[in-house]
Image 1: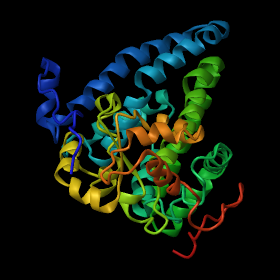
Image 2: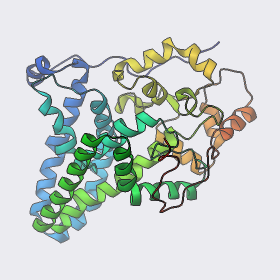
Image 3: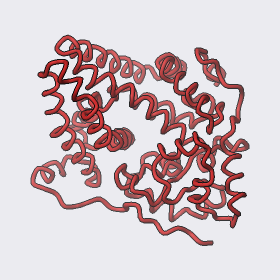
Image 4: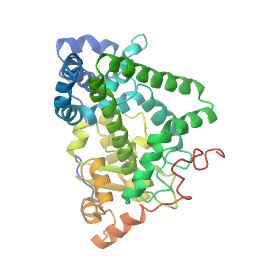
Length: 358
């Protein structure tokens, strides 16, 4: 069996400046210093620009809007989102210093389109519990995952009824503490935006509102792609309801986020250990028929290739452990994207698939 050589990062930079060395004693794992650095860069670059926008007249904010949004999302959007993801699963600081963990979601999150507590409530306390099965309020199972109109339906349900679905889910599951934190975080964000709009409505729109709208589209793009390829006969199997994206620059920038199968198998695994876990257990990936793409890029590119039905490109990057022809690879990938369980819910249907019965 020929296996790919992994070039994704397996170790963190252990060269620290004086300020970083001061933080090391209160950190749980020094490999997470990369998140401290990312936080520092966002603080030192984005926050000063934000302050300047709020001091500027509306006409100047309008002129600066596109360059600002491009700088924020291209420079930090992915890195911040995956930092929020990683630090949500594995907090950075030791007991007594855990209040510092709130800096990423509460202080930096609103600048990158995230409300403070929604990601944790949705991702850690719902998505990882339900694993893309019908009780998962962002499940992809009922959709054909290479159809743009079905994706738009999927996004619209999340965008317009996401609050209702997640609130209902947490309530039915008895996760009242998580639900309260979620509601407090959302109300805090809306109060902050209202206060910011009172100071400068144009800056509030550009700095907080538009990034939130953009991020909620991008998050659904990412989730749709991560769970696009599902085995209809075994949808609960993490090996068969997600993908691994290996040997891509994306993993160097986004802390090995491409290893989504590994992540669902080991949610708290440190980011530097994901490539090694894949290598050590590759025989199981082969046995389970896992979909692994080599050098394909990020989940946004997978989504685009699905929407354009460019299966040839995906087939060329598919790590083929079974000696399939190109035509067989294409057929294999196509077999994994059709709607698999139940009928697609109505756009404004409040009750999610099977949730009440689970």
